[in-house]
Image (cartoon, rainbow, N blue to C red; front, side, top):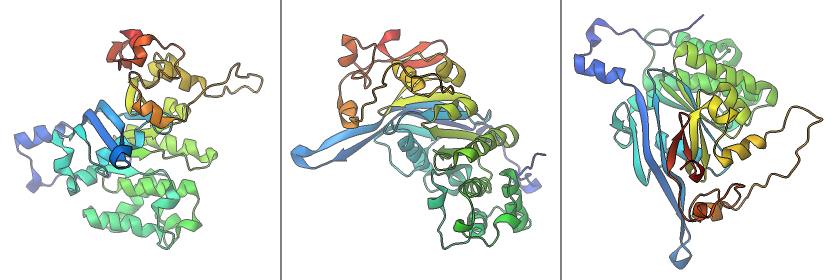
Length: 340
């Protein structure tokens, strides 16, 4: 049964025509987003574009699960921090419902509508603070309750498969990692958000519990109409849960499209390498060759041309000199000279 946390508008809260049109156009637009970090001083100073001209859009009137995937150091989490306002962009634009994120930073309307779910549930909660207080404080801070506070908290917990009786009065040490992550999601749902930004939300959870969280995201999208940005390095869960996927490499999106097309038939050599690195579920099957993954992040960030040219099996001379453009291939974007 669907539990609806959305409040019905009162007679005194009618919107005029302009406000209705503005409210109906729920979208997140990221345009040429760039974040440059500097380290060192003087002649030893260097810069790294952790996010480099990243662009994508989400239509929250048609909720989807949009995944940012790639190995460590690809810029996935930095994109999330920029959207949430934890970092300030060097250049580019982020617009939510037509307004610049910089204009919305700190505004409760935006904070209520876009909620984060972090990687480690054991770091999300203070070990000396009872779990249920987080939910009540969220409700109080955003003044969500129109009726009984316990009822609102109970409804949000029901959405994630928990109950108030299970968590009330308990400390984080008295709950499992899966229960804590579900509670973290329930806290985010109290504000009735349109978008959840989830940064590696299952990487710190026991493997036996990961699918329960992944299935929860699917239900939230389908039943509660919540859009989700799912950040992960795990292509298996990404394939299972995503509608669209963007593969990131050293701050850039190198391939983006429907998850079936990108992962069933990857076009970019980096995407092909990521897919090949997933072990086959067959103990008799063995890799025939080593997969060389470079740990020289600084070198790849600073090199000219394509960031993957140093370890690409299909590298050409142009790849080492010129950064490829984004080409439209089979209803997806591919940043690779092979598709020029």
